[in-house]
Amino acid sequence: MRGRPAAPDPSPAGAVAGAGGGTASVQGSVLLLVEQLRRGVPGGIGTYAAGLVGGLRQLPEDEVPRVVLYASASPTRPDPLTGLGLPLETSALPGRLLVGAWDLGLAGPRAGRAAVVHAVSLATPPSGPPLVVTVHDLAWRHDADGGVSARRRRRWHEAALARARRRATRFVVPSEETAGEIVAAGVARQLVSVIAEGADHLPAPDTARARRLLESLGVTDGYLLAVGTLEPRKNLARLFAAYRAAVGELPEPWPLVVVGPAGGGRVVAPIEGVRLAGRVEEAVLAGLYAGARCACYVPLTEGFGLPVVEAMAAGVPVVSSPVPSAGGASLVVDPLDVEEMAAGIATAASDDFRRAALVEAGNARVAGLTWRRAAAAHVELWRQVAAGAA
Image (cartoon, rainbow, N blue to C red; front, side, top):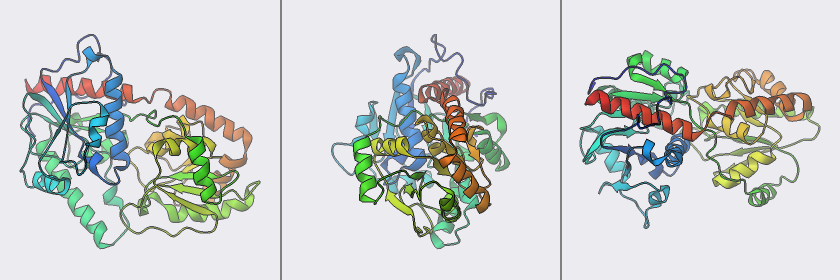
């Protein structure tokens, strides 16, 4: 490990106390590596990166160090990352070559006066200043897909985790569950800070465009909603089976609208009543949440689970597997039990009393899950790391 670790943060939501009043001063800038935002499918890691940047911009200027974004060369002009509102530096290398060079210990960013470098994923460079790495989950270890691409993903992630263990001074994780997993993988617990993610990143709902999308899918009335990448660990095959079992118990045969791009591994084929909407813009997604009878999110494994808190923030009852983000505010079901999932879906979609209770619990759950709070916790962590290095 590089550098001397600061004292661990005991708070499950990260250390936000003391982030103001000048105590968050970092002597030098923070280089925030946002290469994930160059990906065609940024996924939950991209949402985290953009949410963190947005949260930093909400904090008082005197409480935030100079944060510079770093990524590979942009394939387009103007560079879309300049729209994030923070200074941006780029490598001369395109993304695939840049990450490959990092894997080999080459092409580290010119950190300049940076006091801390923070990677938002396991794509980590060799770094002069102390390196902080965010680990969102170890889901690749639980991937049941036996295909070549899945094996390749597992090999890269295992090697990347090993590199991060050698290179990083501190780790950020979104939940105690992920903290436990990386500790079991060999990271010392005192090097891990748990900082819950935010739920307030979606823009105002574009209900008109959401309605047009639904109409194009043949949906003209109520519907259920599932959001997430289409990959095996999202458990879509069982979710579709549960929907098929539940639809006869609903007041109307409401369809299940599934939003999300294709992820890694085999994608399950939809059944009757399931509508695949693909990837949508955030304002449209917010509109889809706003009109849903309930949201269903039942992955087999998850480091946090952003769709759960997105739905709660929209005032929608949620059926979920026991993902960390749920916080006791969803109707929790066993993701391996199709009958239990079906009963949960029917209840959340049609039982007005339970629906109201779930919405109330969801509102309470997300009240404190803001990206501003998460950003303040990151700033305090950077202060600790910079002070420890000094």
